[in-house]
Length: 310
Image (tube, rainbow, N blue to C red; front, side, top):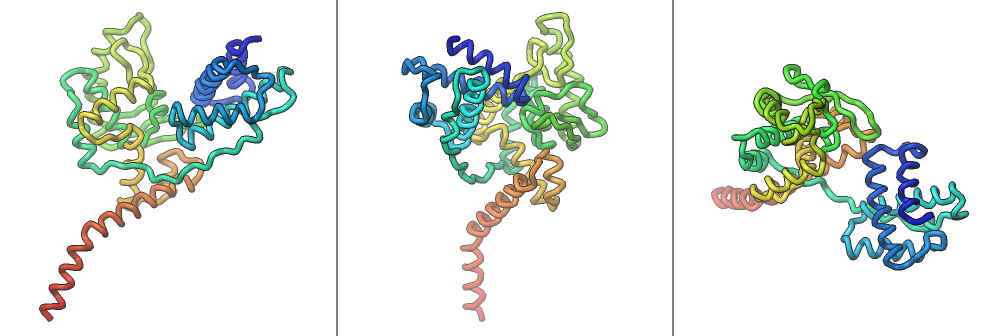
């Protein structure tokens, strides 16, 4: 059995046996495709691989692909899963990936945008056509409801109640939750549904109707890659250098800054662990510190003047 056949069978196992979520299975599949390319370039046999060859693969990924610690940890997890598969079909009796250490993830604060920056970014969108109007509705909804990109892509028409200002989304682990969005996002979604979506439906490649809320120029459900590409182009024009996920981070940070409690933010974001939500409290502390340093010289000046006057 060649490497490509192994990869095909492994991909099937991820869904059928290991019950991985579709996005996780896709990530593992792409990682293993890169691994197979490495094996073939080095003329290595997967049956005879040891920890040293696996370490060499990870080093290659760090240098050639410049992966961070988080992606490296995912690669290790993927390798462990792959060798479990090889054991299950009798090609190996051991799992050399078990001796690989999971890289420590660097604790970094989420990057956020203030409302001024968000407004500048949204102003870069040409809303004269259906695609621009759709993109404006997408970004407004992500910011107003704190959605993950996968959650937004998975939204169907039946999942959203525009007049009620809420939607049902499917998050990580296929868990469902209700999210709330504000009147500004509702207005843009309504405009998209009334004006833009009908125009996009006319260009659909087949006669089949798509249940997806957000569709492309050919009437099909938008992909994550397509939305990322559109956003990166808009962010570049706005000069923010931001990523689409920063809108979700900004949503959480703004909620906490406005007085929302952690449990509420946790529920709205769909976090299973409160510790994941707590990182946003550090964002606000960081913002407070920046403002403190920014205005402290003025405070010192004011204090000096006051003492001199006394």
